[in-house]
Image 1: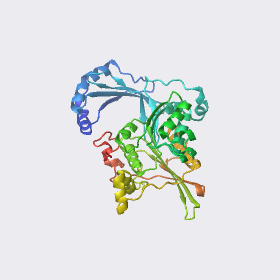
Image 2: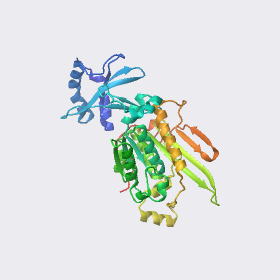
Image 3: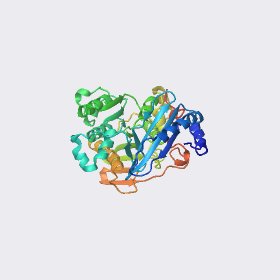
Image 4: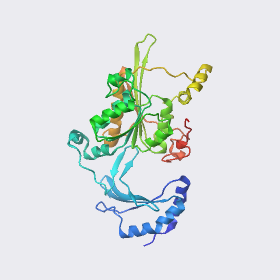
Length: 398
């Protein structure tokens, strides 16, 4: 059995141009079919593997077999270097208006723990298994981030990447879940990691005492299935916006703002949850990032002080008010957004932003398309572009 090369060779050149690994994909049709490689499939792989490597400029060959199932699909596949053994695909992560995780045909799900019986009764066993499979990044481990982490681990998530450069202060204890006065001075990521480990000793937790504006940290977050942005810095949100575009990583970004009048009276309690998925506007297009402040946040302390004194950089360092009631409310709204996009219990079309105006007892939602010619627009060619030089096509602090 032979496969004519005219139908696919030009795409191998395109893969080389993008620095990508092409995948040979075919189907085994029929809802009762098996997506396992046949003798003929193995023969075709032998025939084309070297050509794929040569024409795409990569050492890897990859194949994928897909079979339909009611409401979904199943698959097998692998990635193989020229000298190594095939590395099988374990699951597919589907990103869009809805998000879903599909385990490979030969990667059966383990039994669910009885502790999650109430969750299963609400959402079904498939959603509970997806939660167990997820790797979740949390950027910022303060009042909002710790509340997100607490809810996720109790829902059944067992793989976390935590990022925060700061230590716990006395005022943080009033909002950070799992913290105690004896924790003052400890790294926030360690406080939150310890709390997660108390709830789920088997959980895998990577705690990074660093900001997402560190290239090394941003690269590690690429391994996550979804990232929650719980940081209050503008520079970090710039990175999160690019991460969502270049790696198709869903980002759920949270914000809380308490505003006061001249006399100190509380005037506004505003919360925001913005979901970044392909086809929706990023935080820059929405005007949710102060780009001038972002630039100032990335300066060295000396450079920042000099420019502030000269009036060329906005002053930083103001301590914003924060209350556990409202940071927890926004965190719960963010986690609810993840659940809705997995389960699909809400109305369509799904909003990409939820605005909470607690002082008015009002909630509103909106949808916004990407700005023309911006990197998050589908026509930009940046969606799913992956690893670039420089990383995320942006400059990084040294």
